[in-house]
Image (cartoon, rainbow, N blue to C red):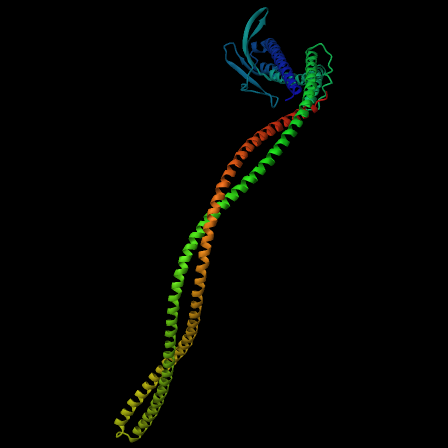
Length: 506
């Protein structure tokens, strides 16, 4: 919240509270005076009624008394009247109805501000004789109306005076405090936001606290101006030296990095040659062992091929024999097929003869009945023979088909066996040549292994020397990197200081 608003709220609060207290005191004093006046008016009314109603009550004229007292009702806040005779007996009671503006012959039942008991005395030639008494009741109508009127008047006065005082105080505050403070604030804000002109000053010439504040701020700006100028000069020199140093460090770092890369390449090449040499030695040694094992295996292979050759020859002979037997089986199956056909024709003829016999037996009647039974049995056997012959024929046909396929496969197997015999003989010759070449390779592999082991020892010495150079170069590069990082931080800070100084006009 701004100072202007705070001062406005504070002054408004003080003025409002002060005027409110004044209004409350004014209303209180006014009410006190009003109460005194109302009490005096009530007493005057009682004195007047005591005079005007005395004659009527002395003469015990109740109607006249009612008219006199009724005439007083409704005026000066008189709302209720009760008349009593000399013995205190109630003669009548009257009340005023404010709503209907009429008089009622009943006791007043509303709120009574105060009540006055008045003895009525009749002046009989200088002697004051008691004629009776009256009780007068007064309401708070006038007091309430006056109180409301005073409050409204006080609120109007409060609003008018508060507004007038606020306007006056605001004008005075703006002239004496707010405007000078705004000027000081604007000048300080220009410096704080980076667009400050350190050559300018706060222009407030007064002999109060604001003037002293302005002089102090101007002195502070002057000191800051001097400091910024000195810092700018130092920053410029520091920036030049830092950039030169940074260029030198970067050049050194570049050279050290290039040297380190070359050393790494040399080291990698030596390691690669060493690993290759070691692998060559190992592989040569393994090759020699494998070659020796291969030579043994080749010898075993020659033996195995010889054995396989003999077995393949025996296999070819067995296949030839199986082929011959299969051809014989196929020819016999053809003969069986011929016999089955003959049996089939006989069964058909037998079935036909049995049918003719059954027909002749039926013509003979009872004499041929036995012959008919025999003919029927013969026909049944002929039919069963035909069925069996069909099954046998089917089996023989399958057997002939399988025999034909088997014969074809056996001939193919025989041809393949003969080819395998030739291949095995060729493999035997090849294995012999391989064994001779393996023996030559084994001698060369042993020589390579010896040379590779000697080269491995020489490369080990070179690698140790290169590693020492690499470690020394790594330390140099680490120092160069740290120097470059520190120098870069200095450059960054120098540029930051320069940017901060550029925000001020010196």
